Structure formats: C-alpha cells, structure tokens
Image (cartoon, rainbow, N blue to C red; front, side):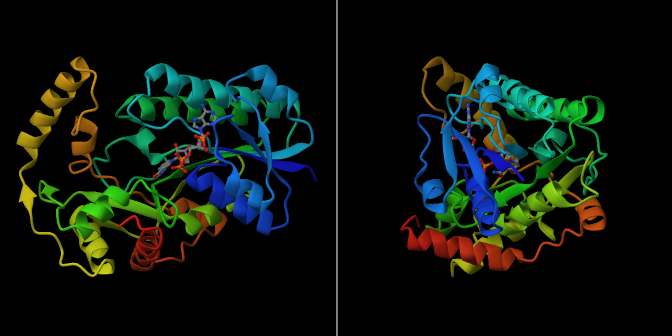
Length: 327
Ligand SMILES: NC(=O)c1ccc[n+]([C@@H]2O[C@H](COP(=O)([O-])OP(=O)(O)OC[C@H]3O[C@@H](n4cnc5c(N)ncnc54)[C@H](OP(=O)(O)O)[C@@H]3O)[C@@H](O)[C@H]2O)c1
C-alpha cells in the first residue's frame, strides 16, 4: 500500500483529515507551499513536501509511491483573489493532479467540490442532481474543477469520487468566528427576515464522510453532498449560537433591499479607492439565499450518518474560540 496524498493539508479540513488518516495508521504526504504553516502537520507525522500543485511537472515528479489522493486545496474568496487565481488553483492544479493520478494508475482520487456549485437553491433541499448555477467566480471555478474531475473519472480511467461539503464548522475554523463574535458582543444585526435556510457540517462528521468517499466500494464514479443531519433557518442558527454563548437571541433587524443596494455602491466605490469594502453583495446575499441540501444519497450508498448535533457542534466550537481567546 502506498502513501496517501492530501492537498490543502494545512487548511481547516485538510488538517482534520490528515489527523484521521494518521490515526487510522496511514502514511500521509502533504504537498505544501513555501509559505504554508506546517507545525500541526509535522506534529501529526505528516510528510510535508514543498510542491507547487499549479506546476504539472513538479506534481508528476513527486507522485511516486502514492496510492490515493484527497484533493482538498482550493483558492478561496479573499480580498485579493482574482478570477485567474481561482482558475489556476481550482481548475488547472486539479488537472495536474488528475493527470498525475492517471499516469500513475493510483487506486482512488477523492475530489473536494462545494455545494456552492449549485448556487441558490430555489426549491430546497437540493440533491446532487439539482442543476448547477454558480453565483460567483470562486463557485464557477469549483464547478469547472468538479466537472474536470468527473470527466477523468468517466472517461480517463481514474477511479474517483466527488464530494460537496456544505458550510464547514468546528474547533479550528475561523470562518464562522465573525458570526460568533458579533453575537457574543451583542452587535449582531439580522439583515432581512432570517427565514432563509442554511446548512452546516461539523468537521468530524465531514471527515468521516470524506473517508467513506475514499474507501467505500459504492463511492467510485459518484458525487455526494456531505452535510449535517439538519438544516435550519438563519434565525434558528443565530439563536442556537446565542444559546451556546449564554446570550439572549439577537433582536436587531434591518430590511434587506436597502442594505443590498448600499453594498453594491460600497463595493464599487471601495474598488475605485483600492480599499477593502466593509460590505459587498456576496456578504449581504448570505442573508437572502436558501442553501439547504439532501444528504440522502450519501446515507443510502455510503452509510454516512452525521453524529454531532448542531447544538453540540456549536458548543464545541464556542469552547474552542473561548480557549483561544477569540471571543
Ligand atoms: N469552508 C467551507 O465552509 C467549505 C464549504 C464547501 C466547500 N469547501 C471546500 O473545502 C475545501 C477545504 O476548505 P477549508 O475551509 O478547509 O479551506 P482552508 O482552511 O481555507 O484551506 C485551504 C487550503 O488550500 C491551500 N491552498 C490555497 N491556495 C493554494 C495554492 N495556490 N496551492 C496550494 N495550496 C493552496 C491552503 O494552503 P496554505 O496553508 O499554504 O494557504 C490550505 O491548505 C476547499 O476545497 C473548499 O473549496 C469549503
């Protein structure tokens, strides 16, 4: 049995997956960047190799003795992300890894996509067959990366699986920190009614699902949505976060449309002034788009069964934020 390659191993999901694979007794290799923070991986015993996944030759040269790939790395939405970066990392680097996997006849390739490839869900919950309609350049590039992986699985002889996580949270994540912080400080303001649907997945449950995608005989050739047991309205989610923080549920609310228009103007003005916008349309749309998904296929074909309730997951996350003096 060869080594398992994890890309994006230094990230939130990648590190949790590496921990699980090492605990299961595997030898794990991570392709990292010269700037990546590798302390946690080294401690786990992961072999860190500086390999630029955007460089096809470098990827191929470093594929010896690899039997399985979990491709988790992605360029995310940050202030400085450009469409070119999204394409380079989320599509072209994916191609480099798939090509190396094909040439080395590896056992399995597990590709991380996102439910974001389906954009807003008009008729929730959506299953894997629901149409794709990415809402921004990041989601567009994740869609193209996913379709490329599926093409290699269907036509190029690579045995592989795509999984699409919903919003990932848990100890170690900082993406939901802003939400926790604003609720902890009593300054959270709901934009709109809060009746939109939101779906989260606790990191340990997600990792279990990813490992099933990489090991279960029913997984190859399939696409799976991996999410928590239940989705909630945004208002319920905010209420639950308040509860685990020992706060009253926030009551401040402002209407959606004026904020949305203000975000468009703010975004344009800030771009001209080369400063980071405090609000922009995507952030505001968080309050207006339904994102709820069915996990029935993963349940049926893989036996996927999320174990951590939203309350328990949010409590553990809040504890971690407190322990690290983040809230
Ligand atoms: N977080 C969510 O809610 C969510 C939801 C749906 C899908 N996803 C997908 O889940 C995956 C993991 O998400 P996450 O939140 O765990 O990510 P994360 O913590 O932001 O980590 C991203 C990882 O990708 C690596 N990376 C970024 N650009 C790279 C490049 N040019 N070359 C090589 N590596 C690069 C980062 O390496 P460095 O340490 O060097 O920066 C890091 O290891 C991604 O594929 C994402 O699209 C996430």
